Length: 359
Image 1 (cartoon, rainbow, N blue to C red):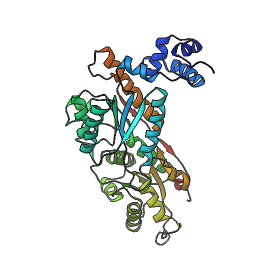
Image 2: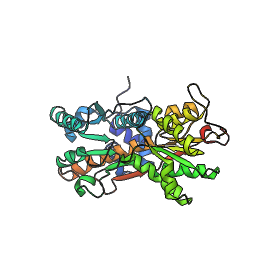
Image 3: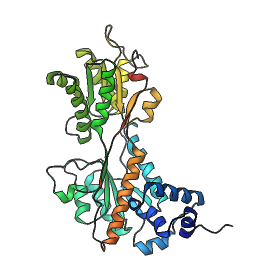
Image 4: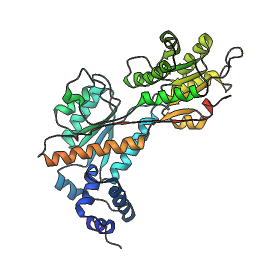
């Protein structure tokens, strides 16, 4: 049987030092991207895995990261976090870390889980999702110097203490995504473009609404028309269908930009001749529809959608955590984050049949 590959084996094969291999595994922000790629290729080729027990003794860490599982309301809107979780877990395993999943009914239940997991299993860090105004989770972790990163911005940009909001985070620019969707539709000649979103007060939803409004204002659409074209409902296929039917009856929009694929699927059901759908009244043209999140459902039904770079987001989130671990070691245990610890990624528009002319 071949001997188990070691750190030295990887270093020799990749023509780098042992410290460089260690940095790739533990502090990738210190290594050039091309070096990371070369070393990771050798790690994959040799099947190298760090010795967990020895590593824990050396670093005084459990190599375990906690993350709360969020429920899926209709089988569609949970797909984004599922894909983020898969990508994060996969990349963490390559670095010798494991992800512990847990559930909680709300933020305070999640905080209770933090306390228990830290006391009983000494978890190294946490990944938070679904951030929002007044989020108590970030304050609790910050006050206790527990490393964490959020997939989502700290929306308290003006109200929260700097120490609470100035933490490591990765997010996707939702307003850029909806703006790209509107501009695509405008390039096809659409002017009366409705927005199916969530009720105001949802931070992520308001960000996506903002991109639609900015693009429409840039095209000269007056504010009163924007208000008529803007509908906020709870995120569900049935709600999207009802809102789309109502807009078609009242003002006949030629296109819909939606805050989620759930709402967009509802708009498709309401405006197309599919089982269970009613045709639009009179001779109204079939509106174009664009969703958000590019879920498997969107791909299956040929629906245009805004895709989030979830694999990149997961990799950035892990890198920000590893940077905190490295900073903690170099500062004698004092919690710290890197100076470039805010990452805002741009999504991309995936065009399919639902927004093509004549569909």
